[in-house]
Amino acid sequence: MNRVKDLYAAIEAAPEGPSTLAAFDLDGTLIAGYSASVVYRDRLRRFDISVAELLRTTGAAIDTQFRGADVGRLMEIAVTGLTGRNEDELQEWSQRLFRQELASAIYPEVRRLLAAHRRAGHRIVMATSATPYQAQYIADDLGIDDVLCSRPEVVDGLLTGKLTGPALWGAEKAKAVREFADRTGTPLSEAFAYSNGIEDVPLLDSVGRPVALNPDRRLAGLARTEGWLSVNLPRPERGATPVATARTGAALSALMATTALGAAAGVLTGSRRTAANLVGTFGPDLALTICGVDVRITGEDNAWAHRPAVFMFNHQSSLDLLLVGKVVKRDATGVAKKEAAHDPRFAAVGTLLDVAYVDRANSAQARAALAPAVDKLKGGTSIAIAPEGTRSPTPRLGRFKKGGFHLAMQAQVPIVPIVIHNAGDLMWRNSFVAHPGVVYVDVLDPIDTKDWEVADLDEHIADVRGRFLDVLATGPVKV
Image 1 (tube, rainbow, N blue to C red):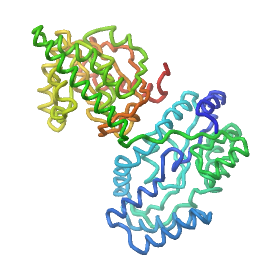
Image 2 (tube, rainbow, N blue to C red):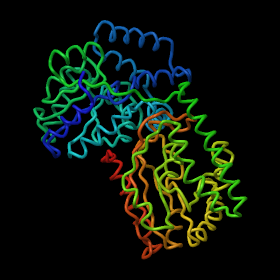
Image 3 (cartoon, rainbow, N blue to C red):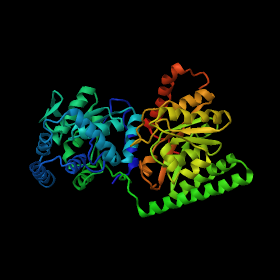
Image 4 (cartoon, one colour):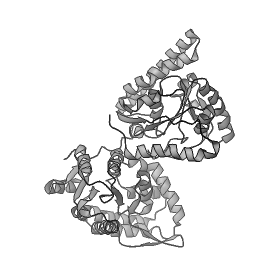
């Protein structure tokens, strides 16, 4: 079994530019598990599948899994079961499934693997037997523009119960990738192909750089025989293990103890800022260490180049608050959603730091809550804010809101972007448990706002968001 670093070395050794193709299978390759299983479980929960369809599906699945039958029959049953469905409703359904289940199934290392191909300028395509309703939101989230998949026929916005062509399985997938390569001028002799299953041997055998990624037993054996790269990625860590739970509990206790000591120091000195600075300086480092989270920061000097400042960070999980605290440390407060004021993990620290709580559903209240922040900035206290306004289900960046940008303009202080790469891998969205590991953080150059005008604000926001996107797309600098 080859190591992951051998794969990255192969990507670096390949020709740079869009003439090198990287084709990725979906199920079991980009995500752990199978998207079809998620679809059927959801339909079963909603009593949206007949007994007859369930029996036909079960029989076809057994034939595919144990008798090596083509997946075409299984796809035919699945698409027939959607006859007459409105495509817009299916798009909404697929978005919900992505946010609730499929997003958490993406292998964390896959994002770094895609980033390596992007740094090399390679053309990336997803090739899967799944339908667009399973594949498209995953592709969008991973930044894969081209998707080859099994497409249901749609007439007047309704599914007819047929496919527009053969299911992209086995030789048909290899054919689709070959035709795509011909259209885009990307010779297969220089191409990468990634798959986990023996059914994709025709695809893997057709390219110059085949990779058995998370291979099943049969493909792993063939990869050894053929001398193909074979790599198993760590599975997404989403559950609450006993050790991780205990460490997280100990970290929260330590943070609360630090907050209490800080508050006591504030009472003795008569200075709330002293109390807040003690907590900010020691609390995040202590909590992260107990959790086993190693933080690798690039550009840390940018956090101190100009104070006060508005620190903007992309928001993936509750772990972000500790990471931003580790970067900013002192003479700072933050802006948070009003629900955080009642979160026992955050409330005490938020009170000590005099955090501004905003109601995201009430624009007038949000503006009123932010108004004192301008005075804090002018008084020398920096502000940390997540311009997305809420946690995203994956590291993909959401739309930026304007509040933090108005703050920086009114106070005439710089904006310092803090790009957090993979906090969600260690502490998933809405999880209460952090897992040990390494998180990478890039602190970008301060952005001067003194000459900004309100009329140009949308352009400035797009520029700042673009800087986040560029750094997230190319991945972290490993330090």
